[in-house]
Length: 64
Image (cartoon, rainbow, N blue to C red; front, side):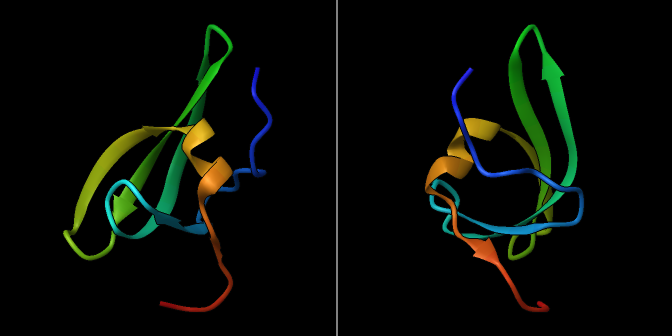
C-alpha cells in the first residue's frame, strides 16, 4: 500500500484533478485500496477518488 496523508472525515483538501476544494465524507478500504467519497465545493457534487491522490493534495487548514 502506498503512503498517503492521514485521511479524516470532514477534512478539507485541494483536488488538483478537479481544480477545487473537496471535503472528505467517507474513506473506505476494500482489498487494500483506499478511496474516499468527497464533496466538491464549487460544483456541489460528490465523487469517489483514490486516497493516493492525496499524496499531492494540500490540506485546507481554514474554514471555507
